[in-house]
Image (tube, rainbow, N blue to C red; front, side):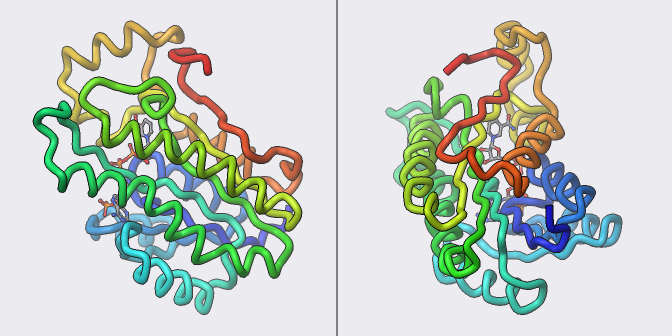
Length: 242
Ligand code: NDP
């Protein structure tokens, strides 16, 4: 593996994204971590680990292009893109606002287009690229109160397979990871009694850790993983076998 490869992790300052940023850095990649508003977490990541952080909204097409240009100038062309940034805005259909539908689609799925579009030409020129999109068990199985999130995450899986076909002849692999329930701020928002019921349904008997997901990303972005493309790696403790 070339240790100089530049990796960009969206939402790379907290939770799963932070674990991915740290794992990539530890493996020798040059890492850029994106975030939206959480300045404190970003500053801590830079201070404690020397990872450069970039604030922009992954749901904003122009902002993604501008940021990718800046990162390319500062660190070099992005060869590894991890589309990890995501949000939830839960509510049953009869209560869901159009804003909460759109915000989740834009941040979780629109971002995959915005970011991939911004890096794809340089990856094609280089004849090398690795894109990993973070989906979700709830995109595979659906989830009560999450029509917006399940639709966006399910969309990621189709996006992955289509872009994988386009990238295959250019040395670009595109894969998805579908995490189960992982112990991050996102899951800490779930009420305790609901979470206890969820854990009972996980055959290995625990929530996932952010490191469980980061290890999957490391595997997929390796130079030697060039025969793995268009796949979805489920990391969910056996909760859903897809
Ligand atoms: P967290 O809420 O812990 O962290 C989310 C990260 O995304 C933060 O760095 C946040 O930045 C960033 N982010 C949010 N919105 C934007 C935006 N518009 N533009 C740029 N960055 C943004 O989430 P998790 O670590 O739990 O989740 C990471 C991914 O994994 C998500 O895609 C999620 O859907 C998916 N996932 C998570 C599961 C879980 O159980 N936790 C299960 C399955 C999938 P800021 O600090 O600025 O807000």
